[in-house]
Length: 476
Ligand code: ATP
Ligand code: MG
Ligand code: MG
Ligand code: MG
Image (cartoon, rainbow, N blue to C red; front, side, top):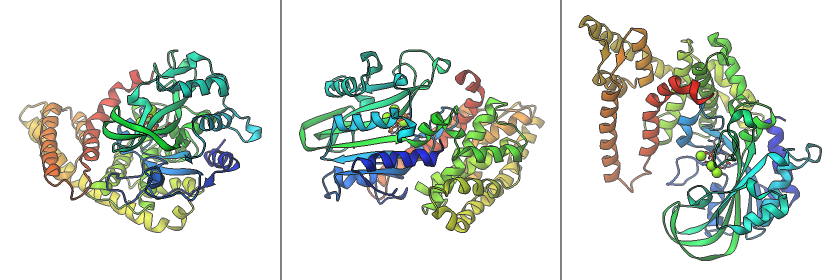
């Protein structure tokens, strides 16, 4: 079942049950607390917060999402994309727990011939908040799930709030058992790779007066009108229904990997380290396409910085696969061809999108050219001195002044028979981060604090590198 078909089935199912189909909002909304839309409920926030009256009691959407906090997972887990699409259904003071559970259950396990997704009911597991006996009872009654496949999960995972006074409530997550070849028995609380989370149901039932963290808050009392917010990962369902091993192998992403394979002459599936690179390329090229499509341009902070790092990581990964020519002109059109079926504006706006992306690659190529010269000089002088290690100082200078990513420094050093003082490099990065944080703090209130995104991206290099070495054990 291709991704577009799953999307259609989701929307049809909820439309049939009285939901208004709402088109995806842009990835960029005017919200100072949010770099990108990261969940289907974001465009509906004013309704959930009671700031506006919704024009419908029930709505459904497939929302474009970007989660930069998942960047380090890309290609290493089976299920995290920087860009993905979240299918959602929403009730504003209309149906509640039972309705949400029944609507989810009938779609997940409904026969394919009847418009359902056709999952085997025996492979479905769910989690609930331990105190939420209503949800547990509903799963038993409506779905007939045995107690052992309804697992308790604490506030950290199964409570939702917005981090501010306002609505909150327990969640119930739906998982599919991929089979014993993917991990141990014991359900999602034991193994989230074998048991894949596909859907999260949020039951907004109470009003919170103080929220100190996700799991630490004070409840004021029940909400007068209870709401439902759900999010189902379209790519995750697609990879299961397409019989694939991960979300990068689905119809909307894999053609980019195939192209990268043809260009580099390396085969996907032949080498675990290369496979991570392939999946990063498939993911990041698509994310870059979608972000530029929604108006982001590369830059040194905030959204632009995220886009820059995504595009550069894609290009860098191509180089690590041995492909040194401009890569985006080869890859971006492939992603467009897949994604424009759901988002036709990507095709009509492609000239602009391509120009932005290709210019960024060109800038990066110049950075690499300059950094490479500095690197070669440093490597030569280290060797002339009889050293076997490139100093952390040098690695930091390459990173900081020439935008030279650490894993590239590591790879090139390795090729020259040198190692790199990574510890020294990390210490210098840490110092710089502390300075940036202090700086952001003193400027707080002027603009969104994006340092956490920056941190995730800055640390990405070393993490990525380690992954190459630990991958074979991780994925076995
Ligand atoms: P996980 O625990 O796997 O990181 P999550 O609990 O963070 O997922 P939610 O915030 O509950 O995810 O989002 C709702 C749904 O969106 C998830 O059940 C999943 O199907 C999907 N989803 C979340 N993050 C991603 C991602 N990075 N890539 C693809 N799908 C995602
Ligand atoms: Mg997550
Ligand atoms: Mg989860
Ligand atoms: Mg979840």
